[in-house]
Image (cartoon, rainbow, N blue to C red; front, side):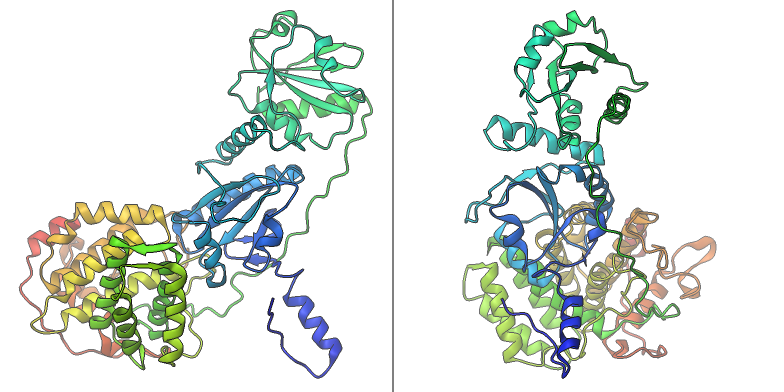
Length: 567
């Protein structure tokens, strides 16, 4: 394992720096959307094998993409569940891997992760192998449903003979209280019988929550068993506290929920002077200032920066395209179409055009490529054509969010395709604009890391007849319309950057002439605005004041058709 370390003259300083940067062979305190304080194992390419394979506990791993809007909205649910199942850590642990981090990409490719977020269950003593990519667990819309899905999977694992270190999650029928205690180890002082439906997960969750309670056992009992009649129980689920002397006490919490039952059980045990287990409450939350990076609050959002375009281009080729285990057929053609419009319409500087042409030509020589081969090819050609990227430290400027979880790549992708449609429209006697829309559709459908976002885009594209656009100027406006439709749908969403609200752009303050009476759009003015912002001559290398741009040729627009699309 090669770890780059800075070299200092003073050995003690070296030790201090290394201990601050590297935590236990690749463990990190924070990456992407998660930190240690979220009670999850943060997996990286450096610690993945050590934390995954041969463990005594099972794992639920979330493969996600930190710039995926669906992943961002899912994160609070996953964090909430992680907090609730912390006490299960000897039985199952929750892990997260950010597939947008280039170094993690090979793992995501090996596990054939094609949709984000993706949950995989890996049983205890998991072994590395070509076919061992975990079992998919359904994504749910609440922490409780997520937990229910996980428990159902754990129940089936015990039926298969695995998860033997966990308390029994099976449900049985009993004819008497003595029959219950005969099935338990001799050192059990109290059994808590959960009488419930076979599909209920309350009993299993209580058993898992109390897995470290000494001399205590939770037993699931079918509501149809003879014991229900003996206890004269009419409402389910119900809990009976049963001592080793076979003295039953029926518990009646106000609400028949897991939390209410657990509270009642703990109160019962406390009244019997039971000594509860001492639990690790987890490491203290790492205090970070997500706004610590300098953020230009007064940045002119009418400027496009070349750094944004280059960082987006590199991310697409290094992490999105290469996540495929195998690339052939439609996805390969979509990649070639993407490269084609980049070659013809990207405002290339430096060696980027030659690099893209070489990549395109090479990929056309075969009908099938593996993601690993494409990743190696991309890196080799970057070295061969170096420097491909003209900005020294690729970073988002216009697309930088107020926090790391906002904007970034998604903003960059919109910016890239706006730039491509505008610069395609500036070429006379071509119809490259519609080609850009076709390439964008193929890219989003096949490669964009946010699966939910990609499905929304495809539905919108079909509804707004993307493939019926035949002229350059209409391609420019079609994409503007589509962008505003997405902004309208996501306004107020958890993924929205509060510093950059999703408005209908351009705003009146940015382009007063873009609005007519009563707020209607002045489409010729909007078209000119887009030319001024995304035109190649106006793309900035550094932060500076916006410059005026020459007017671009403007054909007769079918304003009626475009207005209909927008409505």
